Image (cartoon, rainbow, N blue to C red; front, side, top):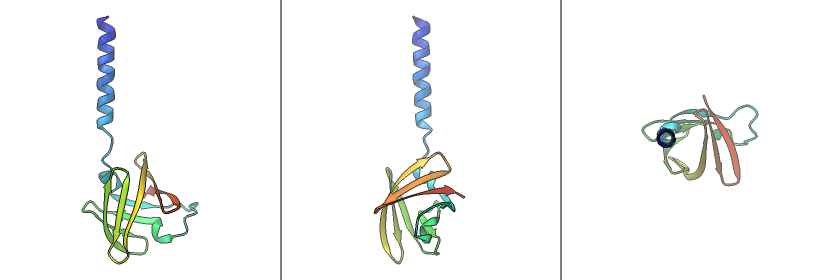
Length: 110
Protein backbone atom coordinates (compact mmCIF):
# COMPACT_ATOMS: atom_id res chain seq x y z
CA UNK A 1 0.00 0.00 0.00
CA UNK A 2 2.82 2.39 0.85
CA UNK A 3 4.43 1.63 -2.50
CA UNK A 4 1.24 2.54 -4.40
CA UNK A 5 0.79 5.72 -2.36
CA UNK A 6 4.42 6.68 -3.08
CA UNK A 7 3.92 6.13 -6.83
CA UNK A 8 0.75 8.22 -6.80
CA UNK A 9 2.47 11.08 -4.94
CA UNK A 10 5.48 11.03 -7.29
CA UNK A 11 3.15 10.99 -10.31
CA UNK A 12 1.20 13.98 -9.00
CA UNK A 13 4.41 15.88 -8.33
CA UNK A 14 5.58 15.14 -11.87
CA UNK A 15 2.33 16.48 -13.30
CA UNK A 16 2.63 19.62 -11.16
CA UNK A 17 6.21 20.21 -12.31
CA UNK A 18 5.30 19.73 -15.98
CA UNK A 19 2.35 22.07 -15.60
CA UNK A 20 4.61 24.71 -14.09
CA UNK A 21 6.87 24.51 -17.16
CA UNK A 22 4.27 25.89 -19.57
CA UNK A 23 5.89 28.82 -21.33
CA UNK A 24 4.81 32.34 -20.56
CA UNK A 25 2.96 33.44 -23.73
CA UNK A 26 4.62 36.85 -23.72
CA UNK A 27 8.08 35.31 -23.50
CA UNK A 28 7.17 32.60 -26.03
CA UNK A 29 6.06 35.15 -28.63
CA UNK A 30 9.26 37.24 -28.51
CA UNK A 31 11.21 36.74 -31.73
CA UNK A 32 10.60 36.76 -35.47
CA UNK A 33 7.67 34.84 -36.96
CA UNK A 34 6.77 34.28 -40.60
CA UNK A 35 4.28 32.52 -42.84
CA UNK A 36 5.53 29.66 -44.95
CA UNK A 37 5.39 29.77 -48.74
CA UNK A 38 2.31 27.54 -48.75
CA UNK A 39 0.30 30.05 -46.72
CA UNK A 40 -2.90 31.24 -48.34
CA UNK A 41 -2.99 34.42 -46.29
CA UNK A 42 -3.45 37.36 -48.64
CA UNK A 43 -1.96 40.10 -46.46
CA UNK A 44 1.82 40.16 -46.89
CA UNK A 45 2.27 42.49 -43.92
CA UNK A 46 0.95 39.74 -41.70
CA UNK A 47 3.45 37.15 -42.91
CA UNK A 48 6.39 38.60 -41.02
CA UNK A 49 6.31 39.86 -37.45
CA UNK A 50 9.09 40.56 -34.99
CA UNK A 51 7.91 40.84 -31.39
CA UNK A 52 10.40 42.48 -29.03
CA UNK A 53 10.60 41.87 -25.29
CA UNK A 54 9.94 45.57 -24.59
CA UNK A 55 6.37 45.23 -25.94
CA UNK A 56 7.08 46.67 -29.41
CA UNK A 57 6.74 44.94 -32.79
CA UNK A 58 7.45 45.46 -36.48
CA UNK A 59 5.58 43.78 -39.34
CA UNK A 60 6.48 42.76 -42.89
CA UNK A 61 5.79 46.24 -44.25
CA UNK A 62 7.96 47.96 -41.64
CA UNK A 63 5.02 49.25 -39.62
CA UNK A 64 5.41 49.13 -35.86
CA UNK A 65 3.53 49.49 -32.63
CA UNK A 66 2.91 47.93 -29.25
CA UNK A 67 1.75 44.41 -28.41
CA UNK A 68 0.45 42.62 -25.33
CA UNK A 69 -1.06 39.26 -24.45
CA UNK A 70 -3.84 38.53 -22.01
CA UNK A 71 -4.67 34.82 -21.81
CA UNK A 72 -4.87 33.64 -25.41
CA UNK A 73 -5.64 37.11 -26.80
CA UNK A 74 -2.96 39.10 -28.63
CA UNK A 75 -3.56 42.82 -29.03
CA UNK A 76 -1.38 44.64 -31.51
CA UNK A 77 -1.67 48.41 -31.57
CA UNK A 78 -0.20 49.88 -34.75
CA UNK A 79 1.30 53.34 -34.35
CA UNK A 80 -0.43 54.50 -37.56
CA UNK A 81 -3.46 52.20 -37.98
CA UNK A 82 -4.95 51.46 -34.59
CA UNK A 83 -5.62 48.31 -32.63
CA UNK A 84 -6.20 44.72 -33.79
CA UNK A 85 -7.25 41.91 -31.43
CA UNK A 86 -6.35 38.32 -32.34
CA UNK A 87 -6.51 34.87 -30.75
CA UNK A 88 -3.33 32.83 -30.22
CA UNK A 89 -2.73 29.13 -30.01
CA UNK A 90 0.86 27.98 -29.52
CA UNK A 91 1.90 24.71 -31.15
CA UNK A 92 5.16 23.89 -29.42
CA UNK A 93 7.95 26.47 -29.47
CA UNK A 94 8.08 27.01 -33.22
CA UNK A 95 4.51 27.55 -34.42
CA UNK A 96 1.65 29.79 -33.44
CA UNK A 97 -1.83 29.88 -34.93
CA UNK A 98 -3.35 33.35 -35.08
CA UNK A 99 -7.06 33.81 -35.69
CA UNK A 100 -9.12 36.94 -36.06
CA UNK A 101 -11.73 38.70 -38.15
CA UNK A 102 -12.52 35.74 -40.40
CA UNK A 103 -9.00 34.43 -41.00
CA UNK A 104 -6.59 31.90 -39.55
CA UNK A 105 -2.89 31.68 -40.28
CA UNK A 106 0.05 29.77 -38.86
CA UNK A 107 3.30 31.57 -38.24
CA UNK A 108 6.58 29.74 -37.79
CA UNK A 109 9.52 30.92 -35.73
CA UNK A 110 12.28 32.11 -38.00
